[in-house]
Length: 91
Image (cartoon, rainbow, N blue to C red; front, top):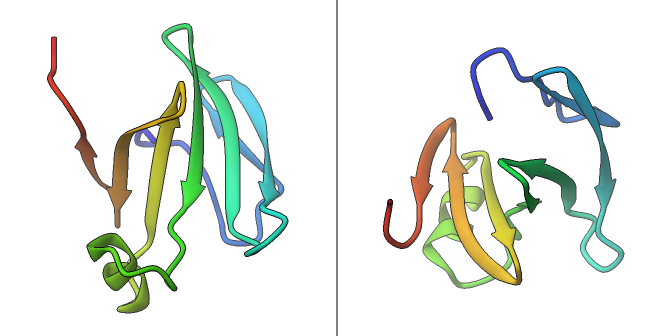
């Protein structure tokens, strides 16, 4: 998310630039998720499940806002309280 982009805990849509995307809930856990396009790639943002054993889940349990991002079935980045971590190599 960029500065000026909006997502509230009760949001039904998110605005990224001039586009709006629907925020849905997952069927099993009720986690928020949003599908959007960035630089021609389909991305899914998924709220971190705090019930798993990962370090990201531990941060979520401690009250941090954690969101994972997937593309083509792979985790590509996450955001913790506004700080972005991109996985893998950068071009």
